[in-house]
Each structure stands twice: as C-alpha cells, then as structure tokens.
Length: 318
Image (cartoon, rainbow, N blue to C red; front, side):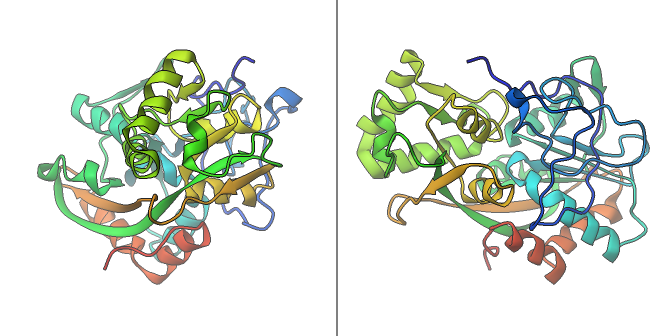
C-alpha cells in the first residue's frame, strides 16, 4: 500500500491553538477521504487566514506559527509536537509580549544541519530563520556545546511498542520485532536519536542477534521500514496497516490514545528500556536573546511542567 502520509509539501504554516486532551479534534479544511482519515496535522491549525490544509498533500505538520517577523524561534526535537498547542498557549499567558512565535518540530539531526547550513528547504519554500532555542536529547546537545549560552534539562521519556488495536500479530516484546512476518517501523538512526536508543534496547532484549535481525536482515528484506522524517511516521504506518509494530517514545503512543486512534501499546520492561533526557539550550547567536531566556525558564516553570506531564512526559533530571 502506498504511504498516505506525504509531509512537508506545501506552504501552509499551521499555527497551534489551544487543544483539549479530552476532545482532541483534528481540524481539516477539506473533506477527509478514508485513505487520509488519520493524517496530520494533529495539532489545531490557526483559524486566522485562508484555510488550505489538504490531507495527504498540503499539510506541513512540523512547521508552526508566524514565519514573518517572529519574536521567538524554537527548534524542538520532533517528538514534542503534541505539547505545542498547550505549551504555547500557556507561554503566551505568562509572557504576553511574545505573540509571534515560529516553531519547527523536525528530527534533531535535521535541525542541527539546518543550523549549520543556515536554512531549510521544503518543496519550493526556503526558511532561513535562526533559532533562539534548540531543544533535543542530551546526547545530541552534547555534540555542539559551543552553540549554547546555557542549557537546562526539562523532561524525560521512555520507550514503548505501538501496535494496532487488537494487536493482530501478537507482539509481546522487543524480541517479537525480530520475527520475519512482523513488519516494523523504525526511526532512522542516521538522524534520529531515538533510533540509536532503540538499538540499545534491542541489544538489552536480544543481544546483537536481535539488533542485526531488525536493523540489517529485515531492512534488506523490506520488513523493517526506516522513517524518512521522524517517528510521526511510525503511528501512521501502524494505523494504515503498513507496519505491524513500531518502537516509539511512550508519549507518542499515549498521544495516539488521546486522539482516539485505534492503537494499543506493549510495555517494554525497565531492564530493556532506556530513559531519554531532554535538554533546551539558549543559542549564543539567538536573534531574540531575552525571549529565548524566558522560554527556557518557562519550560521548567509549574505551568510548563504541567503541560509536559499532561502528555505523558516524565519530570526532568534534577
């Protein structure tokens, strides 16, 4: 089946608005065909302006807000897209002087390359904004300490396995992902920190043999799919029956349940799991230095922490 998710192909920049975890609507500006019924954006696009979100082709789920003359620019690792509606709403309450905010939630490795090269190209669109804040896993942040005026931990996460409702392939552990008939969606370790961490979990659960089976043998056979964007693809592949199981961050699976999508989770025991530590850095070259300081401080405020924990993240490293 051809992928129903064709991300980042248009110019619409969907700005987030408040979104209740109880209702979790998925606004669309065009009728949704069954083939695209689970397509993002899953956040709530801005209601200001001409709506032009078209499921399956023009949806741009990982670019948010005001690209013209922003007062704050944040580059977030892609796994945090689900918090943005509430997070930016609460941040604007706390700091009403910042209304024009632009956020990207792409893989941390892609964001790092964007910072190095100075721009990101999406179809015909070129974005040359410099970030005020860059936030990613600690391992990624430690690779470029010279970029930051200061850094702080603000959340943690852990892994789980996402499957379709009913778990048709009866996946019960990471070891089952090595079975030849189980189609796996796997974040690409080339640019996804989570990919490397999942490989660590494979080693814990089944040694080098399991890691090789999932990441080499099954990639060659076509039964392990390596994502092109980030782990937002994995739930979509599971929902559209293109993959049977996907190791993802717990918060990713939890968000699918908040959306009411037909998925289940398979827990990974602590001895096979890993914990990710998320770190935010104020860029030394931040065009809006005070806004960057205010935003990073807000992440660890009671209001900021309440948003992260609402979406299943763990408190930060003390």
